[in-house]
Length: 285
Image (cartoon, rainbow, N blue to C red; front, side, top):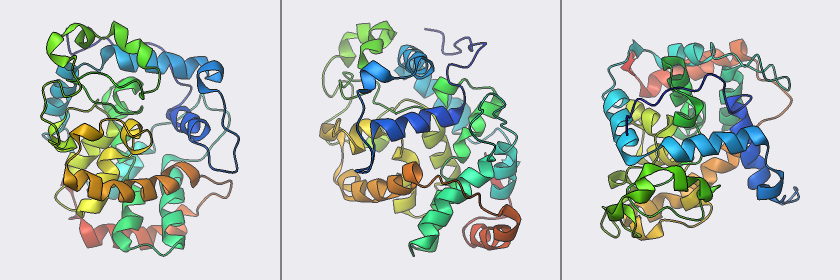
């Protein structure tokens, strides 16, 4: 299969936020009523997952890691990356006019309000910066979405798992066992998860942030594992030890968006100081 899949002319999602809004409906808090996901899902979200599950082959994943995770695209500071992400304008989204930086700060400010360590607060600010992949020209299905393991049997815990029938990897005999090309307990760092903003940002920040933060960043979209209990046979002891950190982070990632918009200019000195505590003036992206 050609890893340079032709990009879709029209986006399957109305905006990248639509995927996260759908997650809120799929994984509601106790204050929400659980909906019949398969029956009521929005057509745009369903089309997004059809594309994601069709084209995210193991070959595609490994090619995108080679393309982006060598960090040869550009150099910029963390704040410059936030401003760069801010150019990702959602003209098609009528429900919000909040900027990308405001979305990041909503997460980090919620974490800060609960008295978590400074590295945890910074993780909230950083965690979606990998979405700059859209500004590099990548389609939505290669940037966001629930991540899943490639190179082994697809889990039926992955949302819309029926769409994997169209994925060429579903015809590769070597991939049709629970472990596929991997060893039991090998650890998720040895597994080729579907590519997106999580994996990319992990490589950008892995030399600067603590292990707990790196797990939050790398696996916060790995819902089949940390919310559905899939792929546990591939998890290492370290993966299992870090699981609660990921779950704690996702409480803020999913449920921190509020109507009150943060004052970016007022908060900027605090966050610039926090960024400078962990990062040099410029890093590779």
